[in-house]
Image (cartoon, rainbow, N blue to C red; front, side, top):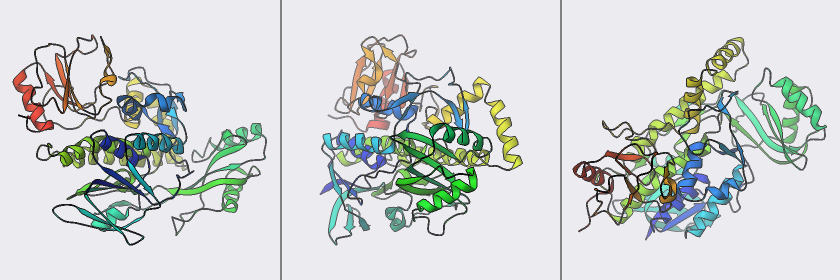
Length: 475
Protein backbone atom coordinates (compact mmCIF):
# COMPACT_ATOMS: atom_id res chain seq x y z
CA UNK A 1 0.00 0.00 0.00
CA UNK A 2 1.15 3.56 -0.71
CA UNK A 3 1.84 5.50 2.49
CA UNK A 4 0.65 8.93 1.30
CA UNK A 5 -1.05 10.09 -1.89
CA UNK A 6 -0.81 13.80 -2.58
CA UNK A 7 -3.44 15.21 -4.93
CA UNK A 8 -1.81 18.16 -6.68
CA UNK A 9 1.76 18.74 -7.82
CA UNK A 10 2.07 22.49 -7.26
CA UNK A 11 4.49 24.08 -4.76
CA UNK A 12 2.54 22.85 -1.71
CA UNK A 13 2.27 19.25 -2.91
CA UNK A 14 5.89 19.09 -4.04
CA UNK A 15 7.17 20.59 -0.78
CA UNK A 16 5.11 18.08 1.21
CA UNK A 17 6.38 15.19 -0.91
CA UNK A 18 9.99 16.19 -0.28
CA UNK A 19 9.38 16.48 3.46
CA UNK A 20 7.80 13.03 3.59
CA UNK A 21 10.58 11.45 1.55
CA UNK A 22 13.14 12.73 4.08
CA UNK A 23 11.53 10.22 6.42
CA UNK A 24 11.33 7.34 3.90
CA UNK A 25 7.58 7.64 3.47
CA UNK A 26 6.36 6.14 0.18
CA UNK A 27 4.74 9.07 -1.63
CA UNK A 28 2.77 9.27 -4.87
CA UNK A 29 1.92 12.73 -6.23
CA UNK A 30 -1.03 12.81 -8.64
CA UNK A 31 -1.04 15.90 -10.86
CA UNK A 32 -3.84 16.62 -13.31
CA UNK A 33 -1.67 18.64 -15.71
CA UNK A 34 0.53 16.73 -18.13
CA UNK A 35 3.16 19.50 -18.13
CA UNK A 36 4.21 22.11 -15.53
CA UNK A 37 2.26 25.35 -15.76
CA UNK A 38 3.86 28.41 -17.33
CA UNK A 39 1.65 30.80 -15.37
CA UNK A 40 3.41 32.82 -12.70
CA UNK A 41 1.04 34.14 -10.05
CA UNK A 42 3.49 33.80 -7.18
CA UNK A 43 6.65 35.84 -7.54
CA UNK A 44 9.07 34.40 -5.02
CA UNK A 45 9.81 33.51 -1.43
CA UNK A 46 9.34 35.63 1.68
CA UNK A 47 11.74 35.45 4.62
CA UNK A 48 10.18 32.49 6.41
CA UNK A 49 10.11 30.43 3.21
CA UNK A 50 13.73 31.43 2.56
CA UNK A 51 14.52 30.10 6.04
CA UNK A 52 12.62 26.89 5.28
CA UNK A 53 14.80 26.30 2.22
CA UNK A 54 17.90 27.01 4.30
CA UNK A 55 16.72 24.52 6.91
CA UNK A 56 16.59 21.82 4.24
CA UNK A 57 19.86 22.75 2.55
CA UNK A 58 18.43 23.89 -0.78
CA UNK A 59 18.54 27.67 -0.39
CA UNK A 60 21.54 27.96 -2.71
CA UNK A 61 19.43 26.55 -5.56
CA UNK A 62 16.86 29.29 -5.18
CA UNK A 63 19.39 32.05 -4.59
CA UNK A 64 21.19 31.13 -7.83
CA UNK A 65 18.12 31.93 -9.95
CA UNK A 66 16.57 34.75 -7.91
CA UNK A 67 16.95 38.43 -7.27
CA UNK A 68 17.38 39.43 -3.64
CA UNK A 69 15.58 42.52 -2.47
CA UNK A 70 14.63 44.19 0.77
CA UNK A 71 11.36 46.09 1.00
CA UNK A 72 9.58 46.67 4.25
CA UNK A 73 5.83 46.84 4.51
CA UNK A 74 4.67 45.57 1.13
CA UNK A 75 1.23 46.06 2.62
CA UNK A 76 -1.65 47.32 0.51
CA UNK A 77 0.73 48.79 -2.05
CA UNK A 78 2.68 50.67 0.62
CA UNK A 79 6.43 50.15 0.44
CA UNK A 80 8.86 51.21 3.18
CA UNK A 81 12.56 50.66 3.94
CA UNK A 82 13.45 47.28 5.39
CA UNK A 83 13.01 47.28 9.20
CA UNK A 84 16.28 47.04 11.07
CA UNK A 85 15.00 44.84 13.90
CA UNK A 86 14.12 41.66 11.97
CA UNK A 87 15.48 38.67 13.91
CA UNK A 88 16.65 36.62 10.95
CA UNK A 89 19.93 35.71 9.30
CA UNK A 90 18.12 35.89 5.95
CA UNK A 91 16.65 39.42 5.84
CA UNK A 92 15.50 39.45 2.23
CA UNK A 93 12.95 38.21 -0.26
CA UNK A 94 13.92 36.05 -3.24
CA UNK A 95 12.12 37.16 -6.40
CA UNK A 96 11.59 34.70 -9.24
CA UNK A 97 8.62 33.41 -11.28
CA UNK A 98 6.43 30.68 -9.79
CA UNK A 99 7.45 28.12 -12.47
CA UNK A 100 10.99 28.41 -11.11
CA UNK A 101 9.77 27.56 -7.60
CA UNK A 102 7.88 24.58 -8.96
CA UNK A 103 10.84 23.38 -11.03
CA UNK A 104 13.23 23.48 -8.09
CA UNK A 105 10.77 21.82 -5.71
CA UNK A 106 10.00 19.23 -8.37
CA UNK A 107 13.71 18.45 -8.74
CA UNK A 108 14.07 18.18 -4.98
CA UNK A 109 11.08 15.85 -4.63
CA UNK A 110 12.29 13.58 -7.44
CA UNK A 111 15.85 13.47 -6.07
CA UNK A 112 14.43 12.15 -2.80
CA UNK A 113 12.46 9.43 -4.57
CA UNK A 114 8.96 10.85 -5.01
CA UNK A 115 6.70 9.04 -7.48
CA UNK A 116 5.23 11.93 -9.51
CA UNK A 117 2.49 10.96 -11.94
CA UNK A 118 1.35 13.64 -14.37
CA UNK A 119 -1.90 13.49 -16.30
CA UNK A 120 -3.56 11.78 -13.35
CA UNK A 121 -6.74 13.51 -12.19
CA UNK A 122 -8.42 12.55 -8.93
CA UNK A 123 -12.20 12.33 -9.41
CA UNK A 124 -13.31 10.56 -6.24
CA UNK A 125 -12.25 9.17 -2.88
CA UNK A 126 -13.49 7.14 0.04
CA UNK A 127 -11.89 6.26 3.34
CA UNK A 128 -12.19 3.68 6.08
CA UNK A 129 -10.35 2.88 9.28
CA UNK A 130 -7.33 1.49 7.44
CA UNK A 131 -6.82 3.83 4.52
CA UNK A 132 -8.08 5.89 1.60
CA UNK A 133 -9.16 4.74 -1.85
CA UNK A 134 -8.62 7.27 -4.63
CA UNK A 135 -10.45 7.07 -7.96
CA UNK A 136 -8.73 8.48 -11.06
CA UNK A 137 -10.30 9.89 -14.22
CA UNK A 138 -9.24 6.82 -16.20
CA UNK A 139 -11.30 4.59 -13.92
CA UNK A 140 -8.38 3.11 -11.99
CA UNK A 141 -8.06 3.17 -8.21
CA UNK A 142 -5.16 3.62 -5.82
CA UNK A 143 -5.03 2.78 -2.13
CA UNK A 144 -3.02 4.67 0.49
CA UNK A 145 -2.82 5.07 4.23
CA UNK A 146 -3.32 8.85 3.99
CA UNK A 147 -4.37 11.37 1.36
CA UNK A 148 -3.49 15.07 1.30
CA UNK A 149 -5.48 17.42 -0.93
CA UNK A 150 -3.13 20.03 -2.37
CA UNK A 151 -5.40 20.46 -5.37
CA UNK A 152 -6.11 24.18 -5.26
CA UNK A 153 -8.96 26.51 -4.41
CA UNK A 154 -11.54 24.42 -6.28
CA UNK A 155 -10.28 21.30 -4.47
CA UNK A 156 -12.19 18.15 -5.35
CA UNK A 157 -10.75 16.52 -2.24
CA UNK A 158 -12.25 19.20 0.00
CA UNK A 159 -15.61 19.12 -1.78
CA UNK A 160 -15.81 15.32 -1.64
CA UNK A 161 -15.09 15.39 2.08
CA UNK A 162 -17.97 17.84 2.52
CA UNK A 163 -15.75 20.28 4.42
CA UNK A 164 -17.27 23.74 4.64
CA UNK A 165 -15.44 26.59 2.91
CA UNK A 166 -17.00 29.72 4.41
CA UNK A 167 -15.95 33.24 3.50
CA UNK A 168 -16.74 35.95 0.98
CA UNK A 169 -17.20 35.69 -2.78
CA UNK A 170 -15.19 37.91 -5.10
CA UNK A 171 -16.35 41.53 -5.37
CA UNK A 172 -13.55 42.77 -7.63
CA UNK A 173 -11.49 41.01 -10.28
CA UNK A 174 -8.08 41.63 -11.77
CA UNK A 175 -6.57 40.48 -15.06
CA UNK A 176 -3.01 39.17 -15.02
CA UNK A 177 -0.83 37.91 -17.84
CA UNK A 178 2.41 38.06 -19.76
CA UNK A 179 2.55 39.53 -23.27
CA UNK A 180 4.69 41.57 -25.62
CA UNK A 181 4.23 45.36 -25.72
CA UNK A 182 5.29 47.40 -28.76
CA UNK A 183 5.27 50.78 -26.97
CA UNK A 184 8.73 52.02 -26.00
CA UNK A 185 9.84 51.22 -22.43
CA UNK A 186 10.12 54.86 -21.32
CA UNK A 187 6.53 55.59 -22.33
CA UNK A 188 5.30 52.41 -20.61
CA UNK A 189 7.12 53.35 -17.39
CA UNK A 190 5.73 56.89 -17.46
CA UNK A 191 2.14 55.74 -18.00
CA UNK A 192 2.41 53.10 -15.27
CA UNK A 193 3.79 55.65 -12.79
CA UNK A 194 0.97 58.09 -13.55
CA UNK A 195 -1.83 55.51 -13.34
CA UNK A 196 -0.49 53.97 -10.13
CA UNK A 197 -0.85 57.30 -8.35
CA UNK A 198 -4.54 56.45 -8.05
CA UNK A 199 -4.87 52.80 -9.16
CA UNK A 200 -2.53 50.38 -7.38
CA UNK A 201 -4.09 47.32 -9.02
CA UNK A 202 -2.36 48.30 -12.26
CA UNK A 203 1.12 47.65 -13.51
CA UNK A 204 3.35 46.53 -16.39
CA UNK A 205 6.82 45.23 -15.59
CA UNK A 206 9.40 43.94 -18.05
CA UNK A 207 10.38 40.28 -17.68
CA UNK A 208 12.86 40.21 -20.58
CA UNK A 209 12.86 39.82 -24.37
CA UNK A 210 10.15 42.43 -24.80
CA UNK A 211 7.70 40.51 -22.60
CA UNK A 212 5.82 42.32 -19.83
CA UNK A 213 3.89 41.08 -16.82
CA UNK A 214 0.69 43.12 -16.99
CA UNK A 215 -1.97 43.56 -14.32
CA UNK A 216 -5.13 45.63 -14.75
CA UNK A 217 -8.54 45.81 -13.01
CA UNK A 218 -11.29 43.91 -14.80
CA UNK A 219 -14.59 45.60 -15.64
CA UNK A 220 -16.52 43.31 -13.30
CA UNK A 221 -16.48 39.79 -11.92
CA UNK A 222 -16.75 37.09 -14.59
CA UNK A 223 -19.60 34.60 -14.27
CA UNK A 224 -17.20 31.78 -15.14
CA UNK A 225 -14.22 32.43 -12.92
CA UNK A 226 -12.31 29.53 -14.46
CA UNK A 227 -12.44 31.04 -17.96
CA UNK A 228 -9.29 32.73 -19.23
CA UNK A 229 -9.58 36.34 -20.42
CA UNK A 230 -8.89 37.10 -24.07
CA UNK A 231 -6.19 39.41 -25.35
CA UNK A 232 -8.90 41.77 -26.59
CA UNK A 233 -10.41 41.92 -23.10
CA UNK A 234 -6.97 42.83 -21.76
CA UNK A 235 -6.50 45.55 -24.37
CA UNK A 236 -9.95 47.03 -23.71
CA UNK A 237 -9.24 47.26 -20.00
CA UNK A 238 -5.79 48.77 -20.60
CA UNK A 239 -7.34 51.46 -22.79
CA UNK A 240 -10.07 52.13 -20.21
CA UNK A 241 -7.67 52.39 -17.25
CA UNK A 242 -4.46 53.74 -18.83
CA UNK A 243 -5.67 55.31 -22.04
CA UNK A 244 -3.51 52.98 -24.15
CA UNK A 245 -3.09 49.27 -24.72
CA UNK A 246 0.68 49.68 -25.26
CA UNK A 247 0.37 47.70 -28.50
CA UNK A 248 -0.10 44.46 -26.57
CA UNK A 249 0.25 41.26 -28.61
CA UNK A 250 1.56 37.68 -28.52
CA UNK A 251 0.38 36.73 -25.01
CA UNK A 252 2.33 34.00 -23.22
CA UNK A 253 -0.54 33.34 -20.81
CA UNK A 254 -3.59 35.19 -19.49
CA UNK A 255 -5.54 34.71 -16.28
CA UNK A 256 -7.88 36.39 -13.86
CA UNK A 257 -8.11 36.47 -10.07
CA UNK A 258 -10.54 37.95 -7.60
CA UNK A 259 -10.62 38.94 -3.96
CA UNK A 260 -12.61 35.91 -2.78
CA UNK A 261 -11.59 34.97 0.75
CA UNK A 262 -12.44 31.53 2.14
CA UNK A 263 -11.03 29.00 4.58
CA UNK A 264 -11.77 25.32 5.14
CA UNK A 265 -13.52 24.69 8.44
CA UNK A 266 -11.29 21.66 9.05
CA UNK A 267 -7.86 20.77 7.71
CA UNK A 268 -8.26 17.10 8.62
CA UNK A 269 -11.06 14.55 8.24
CA UNK A 270 -9.86 11.14 9.36
CA UNK A 271 -7.07 10.03 7.05
CA UNK A 272 -7.51 12.93 4.62
CA UNK A 273 -5.91 16.34 5.09
CA UNK A 274 -5.94 19.66 3.21
CA UNK A 275 -3.06 22.05 2.53
CA UNK A 276 -2.34 25.14 0.47
CA UNK A 277 -5.13 26.69 -1.58
CA UNK A 278 -7.32 23.64 -0.94
CA UNK A 279 -7.46 24.87 2.67
CA UNK A 280 -7.59 28.63 2.10
CA UNK A 281 -7.95 31.17 -0.69
CA UNK A 282 -7.41 34.92 -0.48
CA UNK A 283 -6.34 37.85 -2.64
CA UNK A 284 -2.66 37.71 -3.70
CA UNK A 285 -1.88 41.03 -2.01
CA UNK A 286 1.48 40.84 -0.28
CA UNK A 287 2.48 37.71 -2.22
CA UNK A 288 1.58 35.38 0.64
CA UNK A 289 -0.35 32.53 -1.03
CA UNK A 290 2.48 30.33 -2.32
CA UNK A 291 4.47 30.92 0.86
CA UNK A 292 1.53 30.00 3.08
CA UNK A 293 1.10 26.71 1.25
CA UNK A 294 4.79 25.82 1.42
CA UNK A 295 4.74 26.51 5.14
CA UNK A 296 1.60 24.38 5.57
CA UNK A 297 3.54 21.51 4.01
CA UNK A 298 6.54 22.17 6.23
CA UNK A 299 4.36 21.93 9.33
CA UNK A 300 2.52 18.82 8.17
CA UNK A 301 5.29 16.72 6.65
CA UNK A 302 7.09 15.47 9.75
CA UNK A 303 3.84 14.92 11.64
CA UNK A 304 2.37 12.80 8.87
CA UNK A 305 5.63 10.85 8.62
CA UNK A 306 5.46 10.18 12.37
CA UNK A 307 1.92 8.83 11.96
CA UNK A 308 2.99 6.59 9.07
CA UNK A 309 5.94 5.18 11.02
CA UNK A 310 3.92 4.69 14.19
CA UNK A 311 5.82 6.87 16.64
CA UNK A 312 3.51 9.89 16.61
CA UNK A 313 2.26 10.73 20.11
CA UNK A 314 -1.51 10.93 20.55
CA UNK A 315 -2.97 14.02 18.93
CA UNK A 316 0.16 15.01 16.99
CA UNK A 317 -1.55 14.94 13.60
CA UNK A 318 -4.38 17.08 14.94
CA UNK A 319 -1.90 19.82 15.83
CA UNK A 320 -1.59 20.49 12.09
CA UNK A 321 -5.09 22.02 12.05
CA UNK A 322 -4.67 23.56 15.50
CA UNK A 323 -1.49 25.38 14.43
CA UNK A 324 -2.03 26.20 10.76
CA UNK A 325 -5.73 27.15 10.77
CA UNK A 326 -5.09 30.29 12.89
CA UNK A 327 -2.13 31.20 10.66
CA UNK A 328 -4.33 30.90 7.57
CA UNK A 329 -7.06 32.97 9.24
CA UNK A 330 -4.53 35.71 10.01
CA UNK A 331 -3.42 35.84 6.37
CA UNK A 332 -7.03 36.06 5.23
CA UNK A 333 -7.55 38.96 7.63
CA UNK A 334 -4.52 40.92 6.47
CA UNK A 335 -5.38 40.45 2.79
CA UNK A 336 -8.89 41.73 3.47
CA UNK A 337 -7.31 44.83 5.00
CA UNK A 338 -4.98 45.25 2.05
CA UNK A 339 -7.81 45.08 -0.48
CA UNK A 340 -9.44 47.96 1.40
CA UNK A 341 -6.21 49.96 1.24
CA UNK A 342 -5.99 49.33 -2.52
CA UNK A 343 -9.36 50.96 -3.12
CA UNK A 344 -9.71 54.14 -5.20
CA UNK A 345 -12.51 55.88 -3.29
CA UNK A 346 -11.69 58.90 -1.06
CA UNK A 347 -12.02 56.88 2.13
CA UNK A 348 -9.53 54.24 0.98
CA UNK A 349 -7.14 56.95 -0.21
CA UNK A 350 -7.28 58.72 3.15
CA UNK A 351 -6.81 55.42 4.99
CA UNK A 352 -3.78 54.54 2.84
CA UNK A 353 -2.19 57.93 3.53
CA UNK A 354 -2.69 57.47 7.27
CA UNK A 355 -1.42 53.88 7.21
CA UNK A 356 1.65 54.97 5.25
CA UNK A 357 2.50 57.56 7.91
CA UNK A 358 2.06 54.97 10.66
CA UNK A 359 4.45 52.63 8.87
CA UNK A 360 7.17 55.28 9.10
CA UNK A 361 7.45 54.18 12.74
CA UNK A 362 9.99 51.35 12.98
CA UNK A 363 7.79 49.31 15.33
CA UNK A 364 4.83 49.41 12.95
CA UNK A 365 6.98 48.66 9.90
CA UNK A 366 8.57 45.75 11.75
CA UNK A 367 5.17 44.39 12.78
CA UNK A 368 3.67 44.60 9.30
CA UNK A 369 6.77 43.15 7.63
CA UNK A 370 6.80 40.29 10.13
CA UNK A 371 3.14 39.69 9.35
CA UNK A 372 3.70 39.45 5.60
CA UNK A 373 6.95 37.47 5.72
CA UNK A 374 5.76 34.87 8.24
CA UNK A 375 8.65 35.23 10.67
CA UNK A 376 6.40 36.17 13.59
CA UNK A 377 4.27 33.02 13.52
CA UNK A 378 4.13 31.55 17.02
CA UNK A 379 2.25 28.34 17.70
CA UNK A 380 0.38 27.99 20.96
CA UNK A 381 2.20 25.33 22.98
CA UNK A 382 0.85 26.59 26.30
CA UNK A 383 2.67 28.44 29.04
CA UNK A 384 6.43 28.32 29.30
CA UNK A 385 9.62 29.97 28.09
CA UNK A 386 9.25 33.06 25.87
CA UNK A 387 10.77 31.11 22.95
CA UNK A 388 8.19 28.34 23.18
CA UNK A 389 6.29 27.95 19.91
CA UNK A 390 8.47 30.39 17.98
CA UNK A 391 10.71 29.43 15.09
CA UNK A 392 14.40 29.54 15.96
CA UNK A 393 16.42 31.88 13.73
CA UNK A 394 19.52 30.62 11.94
CA UNK A 395 21.83 31.50 14.84
CA UNK A 396 25.59 31.26 14.62
CA UNK A 397 27.21 28.35 16.46
CA UNK A 398 30.83 27.46 17.10
CA UNK A 399 30.55 24.74 14.45
CA UNK A 400 28.71 26.82 11.86
CA UNK A 401 25.09 27.89 11.64
CA UNK A 402 22.03 26.25 13.15
CA UNK A 403 20.19 25.49 9.91
CA UNK A 404 23.15 23.43 8.68
CA UNK A 405 22.16 20.92 11.37
CA UNK A 406 18.54 20.60 10.25
CA UNK A 407 18.86 19.36 6.67
CA UNK A 408 17.65 15.86 7.56
CA UNK A 409 14.29 16.99 8.94
CA UNK A 410 14.83 15.49 12.39
CA UNK A 411 14.25 16.95 15.83
CA UNK A 412 17.23 18.69 17.41
CA UNK A 413 18.37 19.29 20.97
CA UNK A 414 20.78 22.22 20.92
CA UNK A 415 22.56 22.01 24.24
CA UNK A 416 24.97 24.52 25.78
CA UNK A 417 25.23 22.62 29.06
CA UNK A 418 26.51 19.27 27.86
CA UNK A 419 24.53 17.69 30.70
CA UNK A 420 21.36 16.69 28.85
CA UNK A 421 20.44 13.53 26.93
CA UNK A 422 17.98 12.36 24.25
CA UNK A 423 18.63 8.68 24.96
CA UNK A 424 15.59 6.71 23.82
CA UNK A 425 14.78 9.24 21.09
CA UNK A 426 18.08 9.21 19.18
CA UNK A 427 16.31 7.66 16.17
CA UNK A 428 14.20 10.82 15.90
CA UNK A 429 16.17 13.60 17.60
CA UNK A 430 19.76 14.75 17.14
CA UNK A 431 21.75 16.05 20.12
CA UNK A 432 24.32 18.77 19.48
CA UNK A 433 26.41 20.29 22.25
CA UNK A 434 27.46 23.79 21.20
CA UNK A 435 27.96 26.93 23.27
CA UNK A 436 27.36 29.43 20.46
CA UNK A 437 27.15 32.98 21.76
CA UNK A 438 23.89 33.78 19.94
CA UNK A 439 22.00 31.08 21.86
CA UNK A 440 21.11 32.83 25.14
CA UNK A 441 19.29 29.90 26.78
CA UNK A 442 20.88 26.74 28.27
CA UNK A 443 19.21 24.41 25.75
CA UNK A 444 16.38 24.27 23.22
CA UNK A 445 14.52 21.33 21.75
CA UNK A 446 13.49 22.02 18.17
CA UNK A 447 10.82 20.21 16.23
CA UNK A 448 11.71 19.19 12.65
CA UNK A 449 10.08 22.42 11.43
CA UNK A 450 12.42 24.50 13.58
CA UNK A 451 9.87 25.67 16.15
CA UNK A 452 10.93 25.59 19.79
CA UNK A 453 9.26 22.68 21.60
CA UNK A 454 11.08 23.21 24.90
CA UNK A 455 13.68 25.54 26.40
CA UNK A 456 15.50 25.20 29.72
CA UNK A 457 18.16 23.13 31.46
CA UNK A 458 16.40 20.39 33.47
CA UNK A 459 16.49 16.83 32.11
CA UNK A 460 13.12 15.96 33.63
CA UNK A 461 11.43 18.84 31.82
CA UNK A 462 13.21 17.90 28.61
CA UNK A 463 11.78 14.40 28.85
CA UNK A 464 8.27 15.85 29.00
CA UNK A 465 8.97 17.79 25.81
CA UNK A 466 10.39 14.74 24.06
CA UNK A 467 7.35 12.64 24.94
CA UNK A 468 4.92 15.37 23.89
CA UNK A 469 6.38 15.87 20.42
CA UNK A 470 8.35 12.70 19.65
CA UNK A 471 6.34 9.95 21.28
CA UNK A 472 7.44 7.08 23.48
CA UNK A 473 11.12 6.41 23.96
CA UNK A 474 12.55 3.44 22.11
CA UNK A 475 13.70 0.58 24.29
